[in-house]
Length: 326
Image (cartoon, rainbow, N blue to C red):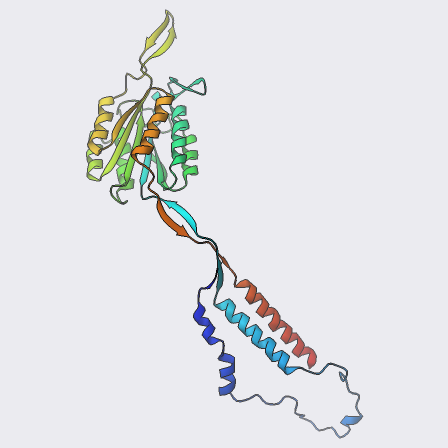
C-alpha cells in the first residue's frame, strides 16, 4: 500500500504557473547588443543543429517539478500488518550464587552437576518461553546485583545467566537484599504485574535487610514472590569409614522461604532434583501465563529517493542541454 506522509505538499504543484502569471516575463536574450553590417558574410556555426523544442523542454521541466514535489511529500510503501507479542508483566529472576550452590547433588543428562548448572539449564528454558514478558536478572550472594534490567531481550538475559559463576557475589547469602533490590527496580512499574522468582539453597546469612522485612516491603508494593528451595534431601558420601548418607540441604531455611511467598501472595516450591525443578518452572508458566495483547505494526519502506533522484537527473539533463544550445 502506497501512502504519503505529507500529502498536503501537492498543493504547491501549480506554484510555477502562478509565479509565471504574477512575475513579469524575462527579457529576450537573443536580441543583439552590437550591430555588425557584414554579419551575413561571417561563417555560421551550429546551423546544422536540431531546432529547439520549447514544448518538450517545458514538459520535462514540469515532470521534474512533479517528481520533486512527490519526493517532498515523502512516499512510503506499507507492508502487511505484523502482530507483536506484548505483555504487561514485569518478571525478575533472583538466583543464588553463594558457595553452597556448588554442591553436586543434581543430575543433568545422566551426569552429576552442581545446583547452579542445573538452575541455568532449567531457568534458561523458562526464560525462552516468556515471549512478551519483560525479564530481568538479579544475582545475589553476600550482596545483590542487578545483572540484567527488565528487557524484552530474552536471549541476552539467558546469556548473562549462563555466564554467572559461583562466588561472583560472595560466599554468603543475602536473600533480604535481593528482595529489596527487586522492589526498588519494580516500584515504578504497573501494579498487579510485578513478579519475583527467587531461587536459593540456604538461609539468609548476610545483608542489611532481613528477608521478612523485605517481604513486608514487597507486600506493600504489591510484588508477588515465588520462592524455590533447591537441593537434594539425601546424598551418599564416601568417607574414611565407607559410604554414608547425608542431607546436603540441612542449611535450607524452608520456613523463611515459605513465609516470603505467603506474605506476598506467591507460592513456595521445593526442588530436590532436576525433574522437580523443571516441573516447578512449568507450574510457574501456568500461574503467571504470558498475557498477549493483540498489537500490530506495519513495516514501511521509504520511497522518496526514487522520485528525488529522477527529478535531479531531469534537471541536470535540461541544464546540460541549455548550455550546449548556447
